[in-house]
Image 1 (cartoon, helix red, strand yellow):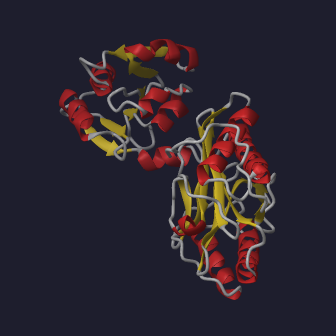
Image 2: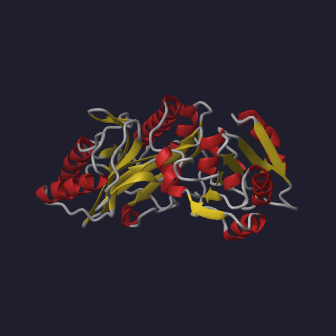
Image 3: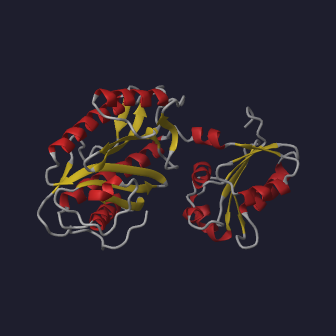
Amino acid sequence: MQRLGWAALVVTSPEAVQYFSGALIHTQALIRRRQAAVVITQDSKAVLIVAAIERALAARMSLLESLETYDEFESSVCAAAGAILRLRMDAHATVAVEKTHLPALDFECLASLLPLATFVAGDNILAEMRIAKTADELDAVAFVASVMDAAIGAAVGRARAGSTEIALANDITCTALQLGGGRIRGATGLVAAGPNLRVSHHVAGSSPINPGDVLRVGCRATCDGYHGLVARTAAVGEPSPPVARRYAALVEAHRDLRASLDVGVSAGDVYTRASHRRRSLGLTLETSHVGHGIGLEFQEPPRLRKGSTDTLMQDSTLMAVSVLNDPDVGHLYIEDMVAIRPGGSVLLTSATPTDSILNVLMATHPTPAAGATGSSAR
């Protein structure tokens, strides 16, 4: 803050509030006006501000000494933040805020309370601070990765032709929650079968899983607020020889992608190398990136995209993403989570092998899913 000339920093996004206070106020992401913030001034004083109803939760979780509340129906988090800053800094000072998160309504409130202040964006600096993970953060990311991966393998092993996408998705979800032992939250099984494999981000529904279908199977979840995502490709019975050959080439491309991830490597160079390797294998790289950071935010820097000058940092956690649009069946997926260490990447999702397409048995009876079937929301 001294180097940048910031007299104060006001963070309002769920990931930044947790990062600076230790408090995961989960309703902040559910109820638009139930906001939270951390106000930090150059004298190293920091205060967590939450809606009054969240005082007990915040007091239990926060690592900060100061906690203040506001009435969400009468006031706002920025009204409380502005009142604090009027007492703690010079009227003409510079205040950093999260411009990509702070609603216009609340920015106007803060600006009206600090009319002589200069406001600047702190988003990029804050995102960069969260890239390298502490040991506890690495543990959370590794745990959610391994649990999701194991849940996918277990559920696919129980799946049968004649079941439905949602039955398999629910089995993945419930298995992840069971394996997580209370640490896993928001688990969602991801399944796309048959023609739905051509639709990016398809939500599992009542579509049947038929003999000969190729499927995307995956899971998304959090552990202690840290995000995870894993995706695999499966087939009911043996995939056709052309699909099997293309998937084998995708496996080679994915191995090279993982091998390219190391401390100090440029994100843009990773993408360029991935594109060249695809071409050497007779494949086309059609996605705009081949991975991204993941942590308190679902997509963090660096983004492994063309032209990016970001470099990979030690102890960062990333998604390694290899997707191929197969002309016969649709999208084939290998999405892994890795940690960046000196000398290369460490695979966090090794429970379910990706060397070949996962097999769903042909015997036609419903999946004995751990949860009830029904609609799925992502």
